[in-house]
Length: 388
Image (cartoon, rainbow, N blue to C red; front, side, top):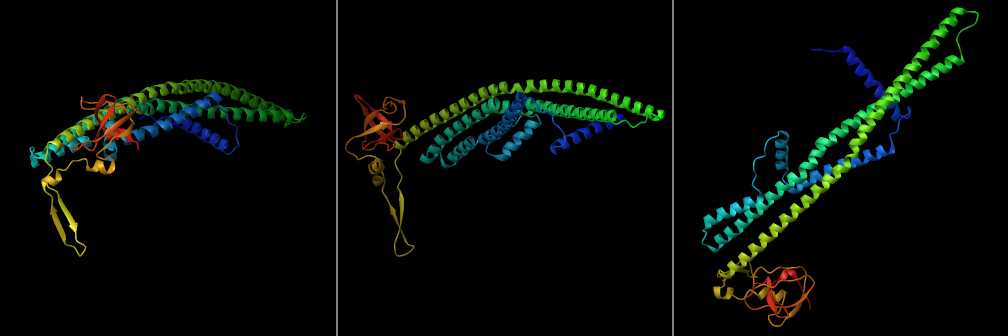
């Protein structure tokens, strides 16, 4: 093993002198070279970028993957540079359970057929979520990680070198200052007598040594100043690249927002289709007898009241009669959001317009009949504000 003692001792000496200089600066016992104000502003901006990028990255990971164990697994696979196994999303798993339950209960039964319908849409929602995760990871999370693990590490390394160059520069300044003070002191108060030539020779030799030390310190100061200026320029160029990083993160943020908008639009579309299918299927099914339990005031005895199918098949507008509209008459309604009709039986709506609405017996309580001039069709209640 090649063990260079001189190199090790030299490195230890440099480290010690830097530590002494740094400590004296903190205690106010040594002067410190201040950086250029523009460079200081760049450093502050870079630190702010790094801190907020870390926070945004962590919170986005929590948003996309709330399970901490799954996040740890992804982190380990990423560090090992291995492909993460495909993981089933929660909606996909729920949809799979619903389909398996439908097989047990019977696909031909009302409950089984509904489980199949809802399960299929849950799997579609899971597919949309998987696509969002993949798009967000590639287009948003990866660029943020690349900045923190690549560009920022390079910037941090060059900043540490700049700090070391600054300490070396201040050490050289302090050394030169001490040498000049010693030289001036020797010139002002010589320690020899004219009657003793030997002392005169010794003092002249000391003065020459002091002058040589001052010249050496001045040379070291010039070298240290050159290295400091060069390192400051390198660091400045890297820090000015933060502006390009902001532009890159801006594009990634826009892609992430677009991916979210696409995901939520798909989910909204799927749920509208699911609601429409469930409404259509409920009209074709007879409502089963409903078992009502009523407690007697005298004790724990209950009376089981079995309603007949005929009584349970009353128009579904009862809830609407109680909470929304009377059976007879019409009312004005203000449209809250735009709505595009999905078929000829529906009426398209524009936000803030006023229409006339009413209900009819046997109609789904989530829908009303809307009229606008000669146009007429079904409209969703959730898109309206009923006026008195």
